[in-house]
Amino acid sequence: MANRIHPTAVLGEGVELGDDNVIGPFAVIVGPARIGDGNWIGPHVTIGTPGEDRGRPHPDAWETAPVGDPDHDGHGVVIGSRNRIREYVSVHQGTWRTTTIGSDGYFLRNSHIAHDCLVGDGVTIASNAVTGGHCHIWDGANLGMGAILHQKVVIGPGAMIGMGSAVRREIGAFTIAVGNPARVTGVNVVGLSRRGVDEETIEALGPWLKGKEGLPDVTLPGDLSTLVKAWDARPRDEH
Image (cartoon, rainbow, N blue to C red; front, side, top):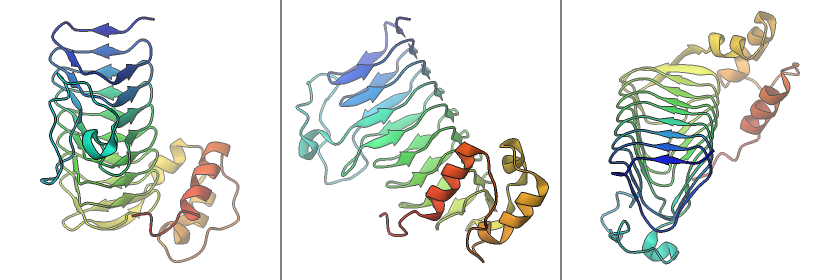
């Protein structure tokens, strides 16, 4: 299906759209940016403006076509498909890598994805949640209302961050973290159960999820098994 773009929306040069996207009133998308299919991008959303770095240029990219030079125009933004990006969400372009958002995410009103962040699939970012630059949010993570991520923080797959929490360090896979500073308070049992993991397997995973033991030999649904193994094998110095 064709894209439906409100006449007041502004799309700069270098913006590539897939099919069946909805782009609402007064949205601004600055290139270089590549957006997939079936996204709902609400009123006043801003995608692709420069990262918040005093030393970088701030070109008028909605009027002047970018030349694709990372030193001048930045590394841009890539967004997957079927995301719901609500009113006043902002996504900044990268400074040393492409700011990347996966597919099937839900980004609530006034949330912010900063420069050089990597956001996986099926992520939920609640209203007024804010990331610092260079963060990595893995698949299925959930940031509560008003949560704040320090620069370079890593949030594991399926992790839940409580509302108003300030995250200063890595949060493990399928754990729950709350407070300021945020501390892990338990395992995201509900999230694992919804992915088809039974109680016995969740109990067996507990020590690994809490960082006390290695990954146990358990049987997990195919997509979850792949995700868990990727998290377990991740480089610890990705930043």
